[in-house]
Length: 64
Image 1 (cartoon, rainbow, N blue to C red):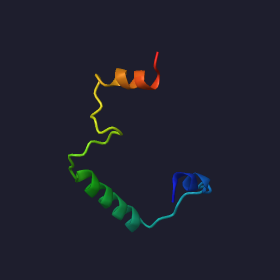
Image 2: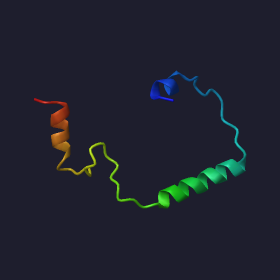
Image 3: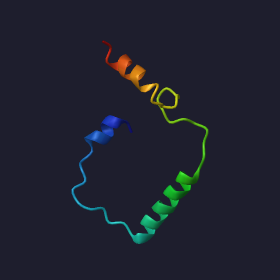
Image 4: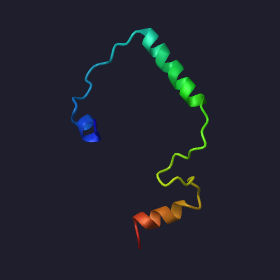
């Protein structure tokens, strides 16, 4: 499935009914995921975003 497939899907028009056990499992799973540590950096170019890097990034996208 690609992004265009997801966008082409029908919108949700009513609340999704899930049993409380489903929500409890989701919450536990998200808590476990949030507790995991990694050395990976979540940026497109694998550089930590700092205030010093922001002006250069803007300049690359919007050159003078």
